[in-house]
Length: 220
Image 1 (cartoon, rainbow, N blue to C red):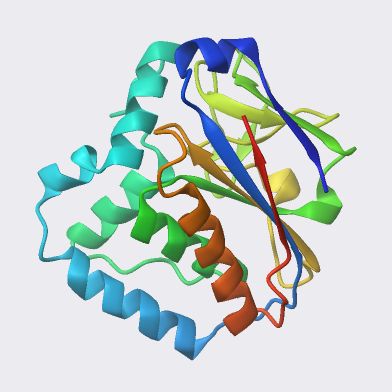
Image 2 (cartoon, helix red, strand yellow; image 1 turned 180 degrees about the horizontal axis):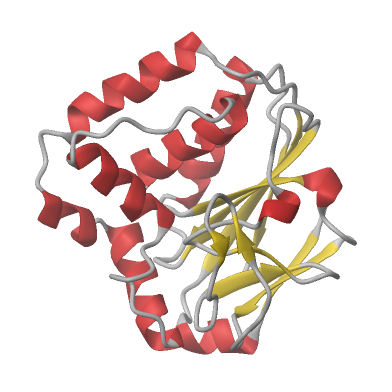
């Protein structure tokens, strides 16, 4: 398992921060009908709410507040959970990527947590630190090209940034070849609901990724 630490910068911006990391051996696939049945069912539930409800969801609201405290405009650089919900509210379907990415997206949609999903074998070293992005710090967002992460919370390994609540890095992204996953749930709203989100990831991994659900590590 990885040693994950939280910088003083983040602790100052978010004293209640709690994190959960799920590490598991997996078998990925291009598509899972059962998983997409669950995604479609949630989509129907979500469209009964209003757009204003999205920003008021506790986990999303807390993440947006941390962005502001770290110097980032959350309306320009939306947390991924908010962006996913807004996409569905506009009547657009989620992108179908692969089973591991899709199941992380489902948990993010259900809980409001922005969740980092990484190919663990691509992470450099066994230590990760959650800090704040610096000016001109290199970061290639998945499908986004160069991303300005100044003022964004960011996990760094030995090489550099691997994930922010807005986007993860191309360098450590999951693919069909992924055999070990590290999923990090960011509790900027504290510990309420954190264990449930981690358990949801484990459940979906057992159902759709030929996994035993792996192990959970909590950190702050």
